Image (cartoon, rainbow over all chains, first blue to last red; front, side):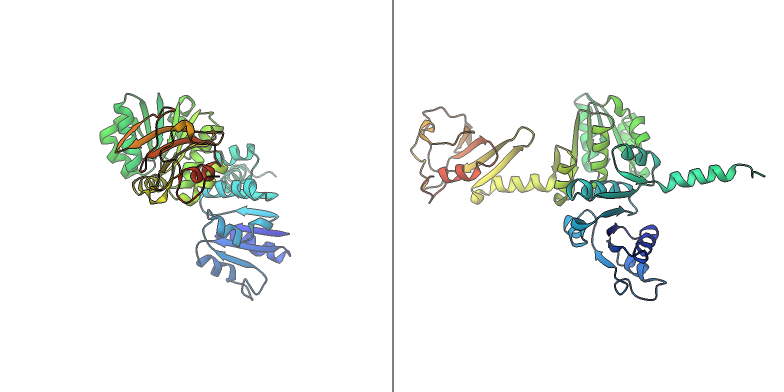
Length: 142
Length: 223
């Protein structure tokens, strides 16, 4: 199983590390070299030595996506810090490259909901946070 | 016509001003507070503050009744998203998107966002129009309609010099629509004779460019 993660901030890099540890083949694409250091941080071996791949490039550039392996990806995760970037590259992965499973992080619950209706698998951390606050406010059940 | 313009940069602000002067109803949406405050001095109620990729901002601007949505921010992802949502969620008939980076043009096309206008491409076409050494210039491609309009310069040793329009063996699906001669253009008739140095405008089905070029250009013995 080959997983391509675009955007390795706190979420993307943590997902990348756990996917690699779980035995997946993992490739990461990010435009910031610092994100590569984030992948190495706290690990005993470097990201590459552990078997991970890293490509420096912009998500919207088709060449960078291809270099990062989008054509053979089984799973595509869009987790950059831009909702609109994530939604656009996810559709490129799905429609142009035919990636079977595409998962998109969308902070805005409204956009996440509409694009979910359109067939994208969206995850909205904001929506999850709202729900967690709501349930945390409930009086403790005894 | 009710027009929503997204992005109050130079393009968006001027566009909004022009549309208002042509008596269209316009709402310009600008996401930078300081930029909005500058624009509101002039456009007053015709500008709203907000991020147009937020659905409620589009709804507040009345996207449900918009006849045309134009996305001209400096960010291609934002332009694509606004147009996609306008077209597919709010069923707006007409959209126009600005392409900032010409390399993103394929993405607009993939998502069905047409027309997508790139200033870089427009200027390149003007350069080609001014500099005839390119031989063949694409003036307009109507992708939906599958038609192209091209311009060709008739070289000094072209095979069509001295031929009337009726005598030129044009492939099926192409037509000469205009001839530019000594700086003036006219619509040719069947008996118009082509001269060296003429610039000929043709409308054609995509894919016929090479056949057409071989009929007009120099050196080729005409297929």
